[in-house]
Length: 530
Image 1: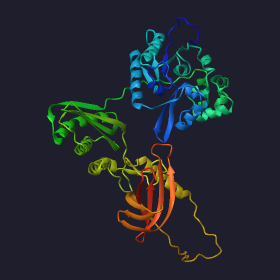
Image 2: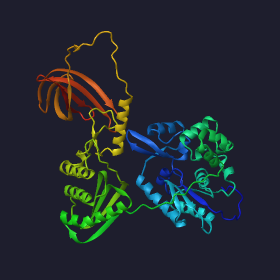
Image 3: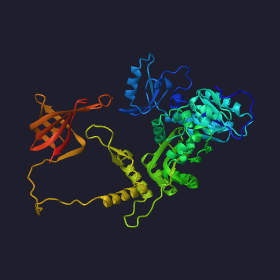
Image 4: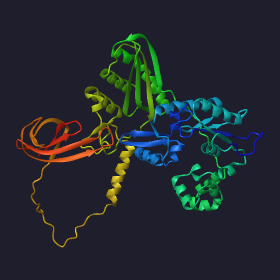
């Protein structure tokens, strides 16, 4: 499709070409297929799986991004389509690899280009001998990668983006025809906020042309300076600055050793200089390491890789060397080492502030070393902060990586507490009777339930489907009284569904809670009543 009159035109002062791969996550998984099935890309873990992306055929059936996968499958089935819905898991690593190939394709055309989003690039074609031929080269290059891409060309950056996102194939919008091209496009094509779109929809506006008919003065009365900018956007007279793509710095160091290293300390002596170089690069970028990956080349031809997730951003080479030493001491390689490779995950450097009146916070370096040593003693999977999994299953708990609260979050919580105290009103008793010095409380016997974490395995003898004898850790004897069962179940729609029967049993004068798991046929002692 070509907007405007074909023919040779004088090259404008600035010209942009936008490359767009529709439904990028789906296109990456369907590369090379001529007639792919209707596909939806899912993310998350069962039972909480959602639609991350879907192709145009699936979206026409009412499937939307962010929907629960089960609801999306039901909606597609209700549409009565003959071809079944194909559900694939998102492959983020493959998306990053394909995005890198698109960046290489853009770099071959011009050194000035911008990475707007995954599958969406903008190229500055100023100075190229034939910029319009470059658009065809971009489309053919994407086709060689197995991707069907749209290309938009215009002297306005936002118009080029709109052309690539809304028109199939290659679209040329020549100078002076930007406003006419934008008229029939929907409002969400423009870079407007959600609140601005809701306001314009309440006004009855649906297309860019309808917005362009409003005077800038009227828009400025409602939106201020932003209103005048919206009017220029709708008329194709507002552009934006190209953010030139800067390749990420290579935060990795590798070295081949002249001899085979079999002991830990000589290996650490060789890796100390590597970590020092890595930290110098991090300091030059004003960043720190949020994770560290160590890959060792073994003498038997294999590779040994370990990844360390850091609780806080660190940039001290000696601390990183200590963490690597602790990790390799707990997980030694199986053979001698011939080479090493170390890479860091860059993150923003944290700003630590000393407290004037409160206690000093723990040093991030000491905290990281302490957690690493604890993980080496008891296992890294047993060290962390407690977390509540997203499930209703009774007694389920998990650990997540311990990360100290940032100083900014602490300051915000302190300010919120002070404001809450300042705005709270004192409670005044409005009773005609004088308050008693000590109000009497009714005596009532109550039981306190003490949970066992983890639950103790038990052996139970049944009589007429009721517990008759109970044996567990510290509990043994006949059941003198019991109550139940109370049936609890959930997540039956997943492979890990659970079904429980809970009993209160009295054994040897004590009152306990027993649980029978119907899926496995096992009994457990859950806790006791004090």
